[in-house]
Length: 174
Image (cartoon, rainbow, N blue to C red; front, side):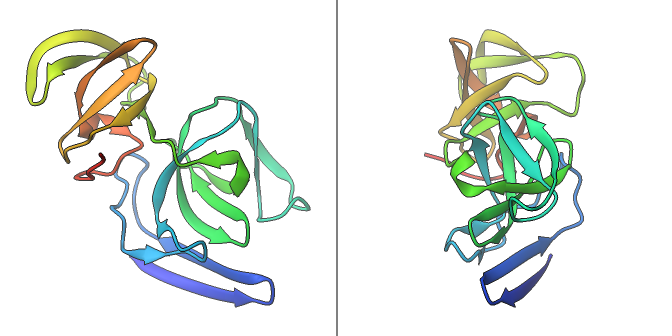
């Protein structure tokens, strides 16, 4: 991983470059952005409508619009109050920081277009308690590094961490 810092009169911009597919996201590198928070890191969208811009200001054109509150995105760079984010498909753009929240969410196997994943009542398997579709969005908590508690649409259970996009492989959450 290569980190490049560009200092400008209005702030500092930190870019973290990593060769990775959206399904093979790197762990936190220990680097911190100008906000003092780690880069890269996962967050989620605070609103149902979030403009993603081509650059870090309102003068840059809107590249696309996210239309799903709670969707996980990965912050890969910061500039002033703007965050460069990457979605589960690997697309990147700039979002104003107040449209993001630290609430941790994840998508179940977004790299598969179909399929079902079982949620279990215990860590490391146990009894299946629910089934969720590929692409399901939910809240994650209590990740052990291999398993995460996942809650979506009134269902909850444990799922293998490597089946989620929104947490890093081996990451622990309490």
